[in-house]
Amino acid sequence: MSDASTFVLDPRLEGDSFPVLDLSLATVRLMDDARFPWVILVPRRPGLAELIDLDDAARATLWAEIDAVSRALKSLTHCDKLNVAALGNMVRQLHIHVIARFETDAAWPGAVWGVGGERQTYAAPQALRLAARLREALAA
Image (tube, rainbow, N blue to C red; front, side, top):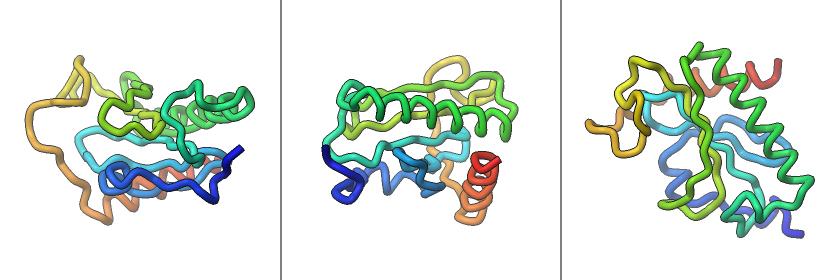
């Protein structure tokens, strides 16, 4: 089985997000769109494209990490709904989106992808503060 030592994050994911922390399996990153509190989890294993590419134990670990991240994001944002998805149409590398949604957000009730208007990038201090809050919530 391949391990994290040969893992390379897709450059598009790296360029569109800020690091938050590494869990036992997945790296957690904050997507750079301030309109939506949005994180991704990327299992640190090379060559993964689908959830079914993980063995049973790794898949169980990933689901536990998705659960923890989802709970932390909901606790921090008090969102109306969480969207959790693994699409991979634009970036093949397996990654799971966890998005805090609000009835007042720019895309509600539709998907955040393809929403009219420009992406609103975070100012670096704002992203760093949110990433720190996520780390604290996950440590609790």
